[in-house]
Image 1 (cartoon, rainbow, N blue to C red):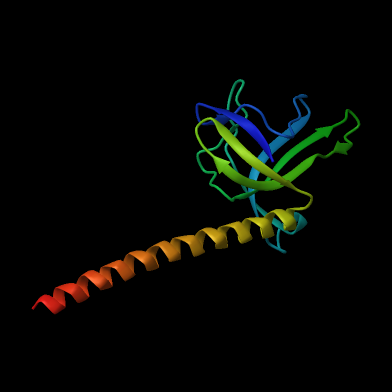
Image 2 (image 1 turned 30 degrees about the vertical axis):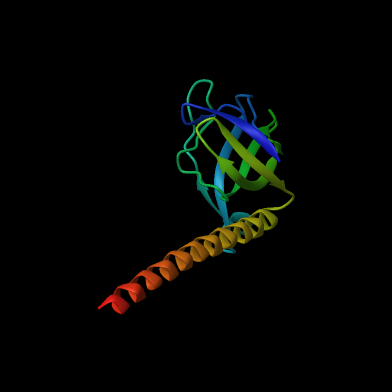
Length: 143
């Protein structure tokens, strides 16, 4: 896993970025969609200004993402760079990222992690409901 610094709600370092004036950069949350370019639907995050790279207020734990950095030569040839992965944790100071070799791998890992969260939430809710049932049964026995 890799970590990247966040300041003032924006990433200040990322795994792929083209600083040349002919560079095109993006950070996007991705999902599989066969009707989109490359079979991936991208929800692009806002670019930051100055020394900051991307605003991350719309990123959440376990989002599958694509960092894109394309360089275009003076002859117009594209030199693409893509980094795929999953946001494993994010807070005001740091984004922890697990790299994946393909967008599909990132999306499947994200789905797997999100299912785990949902299961944990359901188990916690079940426990709370069981406690409440015990309380209700005690109240009914008192009357």
